[in-house]
Length: 396
Image (cartoon, rainbow, N blue to C red; front, side):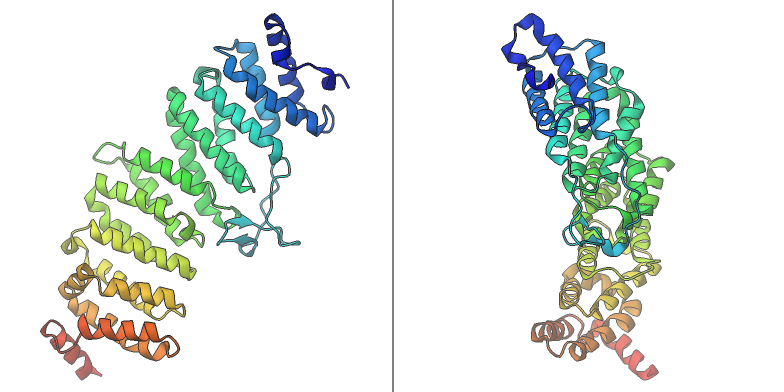
């Protein structure tokens, strides 16, 4: 075939390289089956990636060809989302084929990765500028971060996102709005998507949140209330919990009075139980929030939510969740918090502690830890607890 006989760009005279470069861009813009064989396309993409660092600038017609080549390969229809929750492995963050029970992978990734690398380079090198790029091109590409079934492609899109943000300064508002929309879409339809790109997107969001001006405007608070807080109630929460926690703390650093809103939003209105890994990460985030929040400012209703959540974790069937809850209970700052609110904490926490020994008869470590916490931190002989505990027993 003619495309197989094309010479390498670097093997022809300098005057003819531009024409050959354009021809090879057009070759890679076609579909695999109808234009060029797969191996030829792969070889051509590698050659383009190798040649483009030698370019200092590109005319508008070549820039248009580059966008067409990227769009022809990356902007493709994705399968309709009909996956059930059980088709996503939340431990490995892979979307499974419900029939063969194997991770779904993008069959064309072996050459798509070179398209993404090529795009990143032309953006980072300034060969593709923001005034040459349509808004629709940026939005369509970034949304692939959520639509892609293959983890590798989803993460590659987030790399391109970083390049866009650094170079496309005139489109930063569009980029940030698109990222917010992607995360919002994930919240509303989380059972349909893998979360590979969520943590990089949250890391990106964390940087943007720290650039907010105070006082926060309604739009920024809305992002916290409608996107970040609901993300704590998703079954894949444990995969991106660290990045999400950083975003929450960033908001808290901007406005310290958001603490009660966060606690109420995270621990109230839960519709279904989370996986044990999520419960553990949630307790870690509770500890992080309480570390950065004056204990006296937590409202009584939110304090009760916290105590009930800890008590519920003590009744978990997973020893790791119970152990994490016990470690929170013996944390000096939490003990101080419980003593300050002892009229609420004692009727909730102490009965839950007493039941741990009966529940985990086969877990000696858990029973011993519960006994130590009960004896050292929540002992009814301690004057700080005696009155409330005695009153509670009289009521029985």
